[in-house]
Length: 239
Image (cartoon, rainbow, N blue to C red; front, top):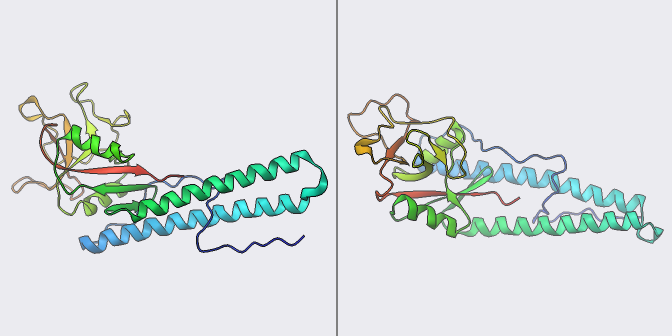
């Protein structure tokens, strides 16, 4: 039985039978900010496409072997059910891939490995900033690695912005917006200090003049949640 395995440039998304969800990783940050953002975006898109191509081949081959070994007219209900299931997976993954394409068309949303990121053009307090993220199916950014921290430092282009970290429930116990505990941090020197007893939310920003810089990646500061800052949203890769 001849089977057409031709694939168009609009790749069909996979069933991920043997492909794991990518971790948020990146190459080292570029020195030039504009070039750095472009390099991160290109790296994220390339890795995402590699995963899509690999898993697309996976589902195409499964469909091929199912059709070859158990043809439609064999009267085998199990084979028919298997083909229907594969077709349903194929259709769902194609829809998810279309959603990815739509996200990439939106202004200022940048793809980095397994997430989309957005830096606001206006300032709000922490609570209103988070509300703006959730309106778009996102939340304030959760930073899980040194690579992601470096990416965010490039993406924010010098802006001080809210991230999804706070200690409002218990002072000194920092929690991300998904309620996971902070394990790795990137604080300015002498921070967090809960100045005036009212600094329960975290900004990522530039270390003030005169403050010692122990590491250029250390750009976090605890800040009053009612302060007005830009914000950074993160939305998971829709697969």
